Image: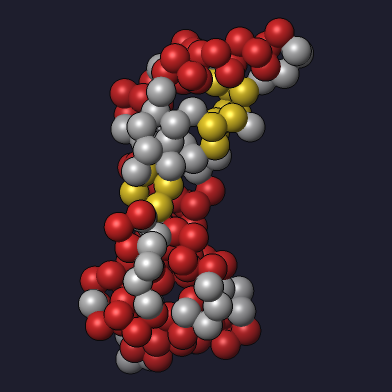
Length: 168
């Protein structure tokens, strides 16, 4: 696993993919009989991703982006069902019940207090979406999600969103 300059915060990549560093790390890995897996490849632009194989990057980590996508799909669908508000509130309360969400804050928000973040609905939404996937399997969240009668299949929408993003 190698750090190539990219840095994921909330639902963006705040770093800068550095092809020179990536190429050097891939060469070092190859010389030692390994492959390079890039860390923080979430939200990289298509052009950066297309040159990965040329540079010798064999795989990448984009799990947080998939988790954020899943959470956003469920949160958006929740607006269409009667129990949606309870689902969103329960998920947000879980997210803010510990400090895990703070690791996803960009530098300009690093010192924000939870009460300040809650006052900004868009920011609270982004913070919940950024780490809500850690809590989707918590019993009280999972039960609300399972009981929701979404008009569309969340898994189908999630898979479609992933296919669109990654051009599969």
